[in-house]
Image 1 (tube, helix red, strand yellow):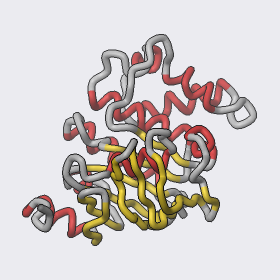
Image 2 (cartoon, helix red, strand yellow):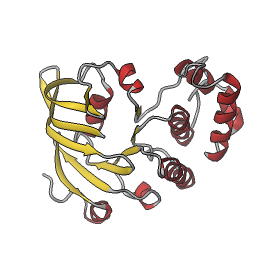
Image 3 (cartoon, rainbow, N blue to C red):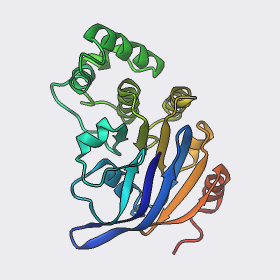
Length: 239
């Protein structure tokens, strides 16, 4: 379980998250929704250990281990994966080279890793030529987001956080990503956390709980019907 208890966070002198408590259980899919500036991305950055996010109160636990002071790379080894809103291009580095540096040869040999990358790319309908190009350089929005999902699949983390994986993605790519994720996490003891503004990805990927944020705190929680309500009515309870 990824557990957040009474978490408050500030950046410089401004508090941006206020007394947040959430438990993310295994084998469940969560959607965190809210308007721009509501605190969704700030929460994910805090979970991942962004040094700009300073915890003023509360704790973050992974499988009952408190990780407040762990740097990002140590949190990754604890099983947390975060795909950012805007994945950066890495000139001169292919996705295979990036994953090779992240995984020891004791975990997977180079031949097996290459085969896994190619088979996963095929499932995600990523053109093979993108695998030999600099990661994300001149990639479309959909190609970048598919590459993030590919990395998550190969790294095989326990807690997968995808920040706006549906932004800049056409409907066909969105269906491919959603169906792949649904298959990937099924009966896997994994937790998937989707950060999104919209209900559209939830039409293809069922969620167990919707969490709405507003002004740095949790304003509402519910099942998938809450996302449908927001789609129709907007964030009507917020001012």
